Image (tube, rainbow, N blue to C red; front, side, top):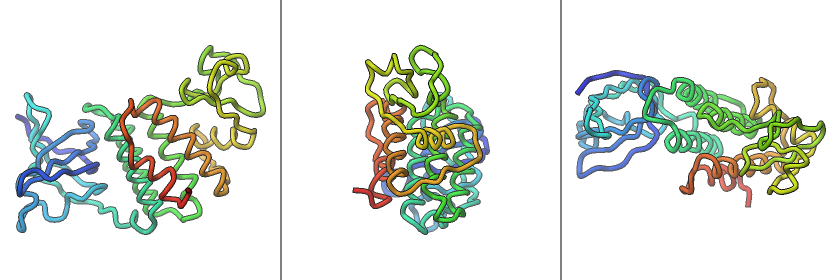
Length: 252
């Protein structure tokens, strides 16, 4: 066994026995890891109230070479998710980010994904409510891209051919935009020019944010959730993502 310290964010916790917790951690230096926090539920636990979902800090882990469950010996708390609880949609976005990270990120170093998650949680806690619909979409698209599942937006996802200007035929199963020829035999969503421009801003590298009204923001959330289910979920239920997509925003 080896003792390591690494920046970490708590993605999920599970009660274990009478006094302990199993904690799922996104770590910057060792990917997503599972660890047991022995005695975490005792009244005088050394962890105190630090082991809250979405909390960030420095995790001290005793790594096991033979088991996938390690031992959390300490957690130096740096941030609590207090700012995320101001609005349900704010917290729901954070939970969806954590769910995607938990589902897809490997148990090996992935600093880009970790930094996106950490910076995303920080920005969600501070940004104006008016920016939340667009920023939530951007954060999830960028995490999806960092994990290796970027959508094809500049060339046809099937044959690599060029895409005509104007609207876009987007196929979640195929992984992005399709040319007119390939779209004939695919299930596509047709995006008008303004929706295409918004998607390119949200899922691309632009620093600009599109202006989205309630109806268009909901349509973009449905598109992204469908894409994630096809390419990241592998048939698993993603309840946090589903809540983010609809109920968190009051969308029937």
